[in-house]
Image (cartoon, rainbow, N blue to C red):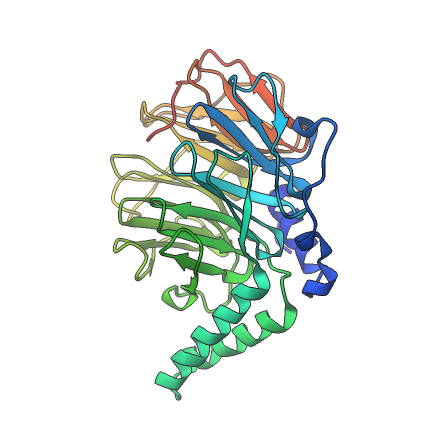
Length: 361
């Protein structure tokens, strides 16, 4: 396997080791109740209004209502699988995805979660879509290949992790994952359909990140894969990539600029919808794992060495934290200029006077 950030590698390898729903009991078990949940392995953090929510191993979801000083565990999470990414569209409505292809939803700011779907059901949806496409074009080589991939997906069961998600609003969203998984919902996650046939990804490359703004949606994955939709996800076109290694994170600013960052410290910004790219100079060839565009036009980037780096619009990247945070997975800007990071050691709240407060809305 290619060199991956530890969080992505863990997600893919752990799920691939369990090849059927019967061997994935954590999908049917509630989240582990931890004595110190804020010290669990946490992989994603998001703001739900003034509340901060983070998710991670064994279904653990932690909440803070005081800017990250004190934490408590969510009251109810129906699965004990690792949760890899999370998004909120308002202070109450949010979704999280994870191992076993699971998608969970909250309507109360992360206090309680309900299970919407898992990898076994997504595999059936993919197979039905591939069968229908082949019926419409029985001699089409791409349709035949997609049917074979869908059949394999179903046979292997709920062993493919979902790695990221994006919701435009309370209804319309996408989830992405290992081996090219790409699914869409138009009703908040009650029903799903395959969108894999919309993407030119014949190798089934992992999709690590998805971001959107309005009707523009961008995907990033293995081997330099970048793709963009400007029609709300009805179609995708591949973008020229400035790097042939894996992209692990994306960012979109309100002015339309796009950031792609990933393996070996590669980070690039595009001001023309991904047609050309300008490199961000990184102080070390260390893989980036998370990105957060800021309202100022700058960006926060977190790398595998545990550094949080900042760049103003058009500037070079400089480290904000003097002490690295081991196993860093995600970063969140706080209103007072500090930032919060999550990873292998749980939650850390780090003072950084030089960080520009406020994520881009």
